[in-house]
Image 1 (cartoon, rainbow, N blue to C red):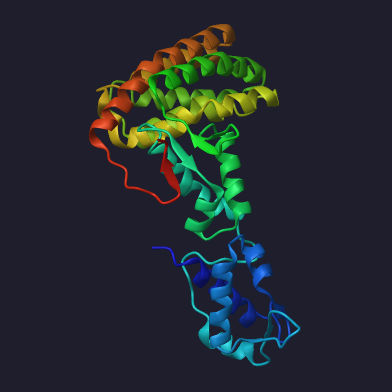
Image 2: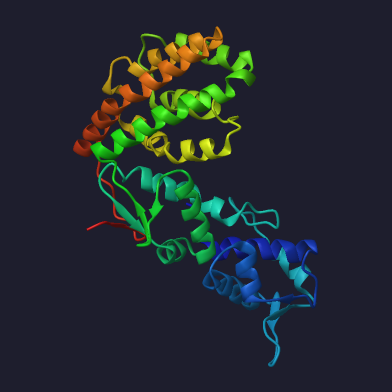
Length: 318
């Protein structure tokens, strides 16, 4: 398991004192540590208390605030510094990035079973991060269509039959237009590679990870160069189903003996390789409209077999 946040901060600070990034007499303050690592003040406070107990920093006398690095801190830090599996460093990834994947996975596992409410405070408290970091996570979930904010807080809508149908119908409008936009600039190699990959598994059972890869190939990577940014943004927001399918495929990849969408992808890519863009767009539109019923079937199968444990920062809607 990953170490608590305060210990990861502690490891980073001890290493910086040892390596001379923090020098004797340097001032260390709780709020600056919290802001730097994108955490709440509680883990920052605990890390500094540990540093003080180890004799690496000393509390400044009033009216000064914070701590000062002890004159012998580097020598002491050399004896105390320990490796950690996931340390913070001065080049740490953005704070939202460290927790985003976990929150996204938690939502995609639950929206097939109902609607959910999230709060900045709940996320911040659970992950021991600042509310600013929690807000960044929610904004990115919104950009991927997983949550909405309509003035009553952050809501992750249930993947009901009507919502699934609406999303696929919207994608059937947007993605063919994006394909038309990128078609003139698509290199031949990735199209050939996608076709070869699909043909190599034709008529066979495919595991969930491979199914998800095929979905990303066609619907994300191929359309990524779309130069119409408004179209690209709308398309991305409508693709929350792709994120949910990543979870679905883990648990019911074998729902169909041969996954139907594989042949449908080939029907899009074959004319695209030949330059028949209009036919490729028509096939993509048909594929997306046909996919709605299959998504409903996957959701129904999951509801019979999968149970989600409760999470403190995700509340079911009444």
